[in-house]
Every structure is written in structure tokens, then in C-alpha cells.
Image 1 (spheres, rainbow, N blue to C red):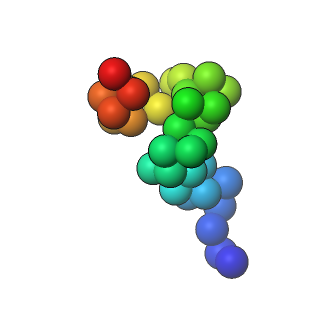
Image 2: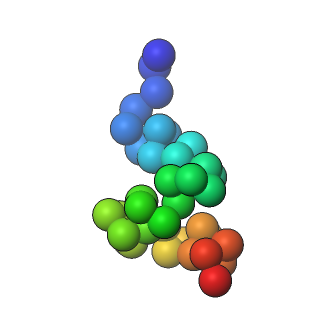
Length: 39
């Protein structure tokens, strides 16, 4: 434990299985760097 929601979110962004869904839910977070891997 000890992880906050943002750290968990960043881990999920790295997971290709969750990337698209998180991008749709939180574009303001993902667009920084993960958007490059979506295109």
C-alpha cells in the first residue's frame, strides 16, 4: 500500500490494456507523455 491515486493512475497509464480508457477519462493527465504512445 502507500500509493496514492495519482501514482496508481500513472501505473495504469503505462499498462497498454488501460491506456486508452484512462486517456478518455483523464486526457489532461495522459496528454503529457503517454499520448505519444497512442499515436
